[in-house]
Amino acid sequence: MSQDTPFISIVIPTWNRPNLVARLVGAINADNQYDDLEIVVVDNASKEENWIRLQQVAAAHSNVRLYRNSVNIGMTPNWNKAIEYARGD
Image (cartoon, rainbow, N blue to C red):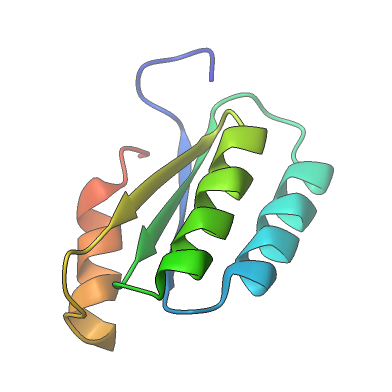
């Protein structure tokens, strides 16, 4: 990203769905015409192999910020956590 504060944040809370997240991130970035968009992925304590896959996805896309909860905090709290991490306007 070219700016410290992106204009748009897309948040993706997830749990044990790394392949869907990979497809979604790929689709977002394929259509993205802006360099001030961030994608915030918050993993809700997925299985280790799924976490590793998410790390690979994040490493392949410079606009992805990846976080992991140490324990599963539930769906709604994970959504809220993702929103807290978002820096976009």
